[in-house]
Image (cartoon, rainbow, N blue to C red; front, side):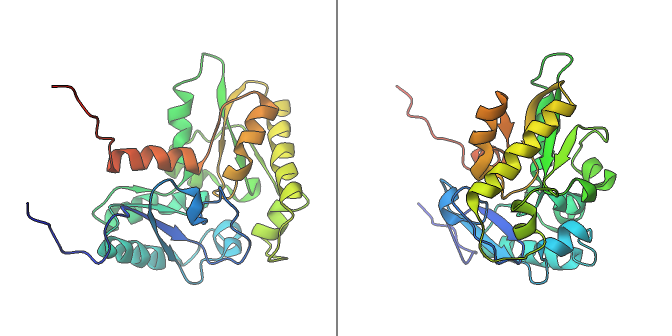
Length: 241
């Protein structure tokens, strides 16, 4: 057997482009290494703060994300994802700049989940910032522009800590309440919602609670990346001979 070289790091095929932030990355958060049941490579993109990406449309950051993605590929990443659903706006450009599969946003699941629902039911989206999630973000992820959607801007903790960066600490119970409030508002305003996709990569810690509260399937960046990874490393089955 010949062992093939040419990389700096082996055994971690998924590369994650991280925002530059200081809030806590609790288990379930994309930026917590214990979240993943497989090894990953993290790369923080300097200057890509949540405020700049979410509230300012990631203006001027495309070259930095491309350079970071290329660095991860050089290290050994066989696929690239990102730490913010709002980076769907860079999907085409990053995919064109690297030679590996790219999945920038949890929002890319919306068409897949819609295909599973019965007639008359629609996918709804819970996002960290409804006001900032523009038609350009949605179109880049293949999401219908009239998708039912709610945000956490009016909440007490989640938006305040993650986007406004008013504290490096977070009250997890209040953050959970913000997600549950947004989910309840979504289905109250849109009773046709039959499943929910969480845009924000910091929301997976609360997905199980939201699914139990709403009685609906809930999908997030964790569900998408586990699917993504399954293609990179398909399970090898022991077959009887």
